[in-house]
Image (cartoon, rainbow, N blue to C red; front, side, top):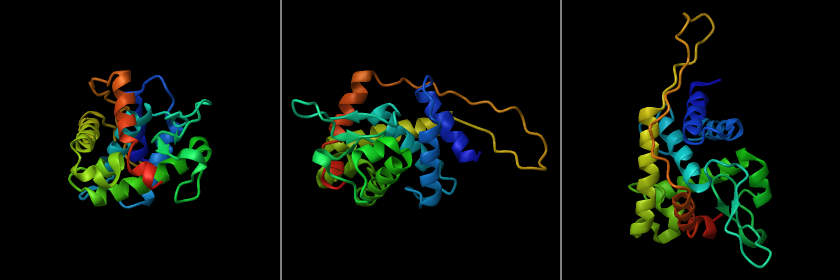
Amino acid sequence: MSTLLSWVLAATASLAPTRAHEALATAITTVIERESPLFRADDDRKKTAAFLVAVAFRESSLKPDAVGDHVGTKRTPTSFCAYQINLPWGRKTAEGWSGEDLVSDPLKCVSAAYRMLQESARACPEHPLAWYAEGPTGCTSERAKRISRDRMALAARLRKTVTVPDVQEPGDAPSEERSFRTPDLPLAPREHVIVASRHARTGSRHARP
């Protein structure tokens, strides 16, 4: 197990300790390691990883199979997976994936979300989630910038408080027993998580899946 995967598992467990996170954490790590980081001076990818964990926590409480934004008399879901990617009326992502694809495959979910987060970070470098939250108007929207600051603040606290030792390689001297520090985070009330993420789902994820 890589050091980054160990860290992502510890970070997700600190936010939702009663749920298994292996599938989502592995997908997050796989995408981050194969792509360029979202931020400069992030060679170890930890800043990017913390940001992805924070966004997924606020969007879905880290549930890979989350569905939301139900519409119509049949309450049909239009937002899917841990990042609540909005695909109304059978639309597909730019990669050609349906909402069901995203829910059933965390790697596809994270891959699609990462592409959109890259677009958002390029569009609004000072508020990297603003475009993701509210589309083309996000960079100047106070609400979108506030959402971005919240996710960035949560990511910063995760980087500060969640630690794991380096992974021991064969032949290395024995390392100390692994221990994860659980951050003393005031977890957002359930209604705050839902309301914030639904506000965020009114923008670019809808216009440009």
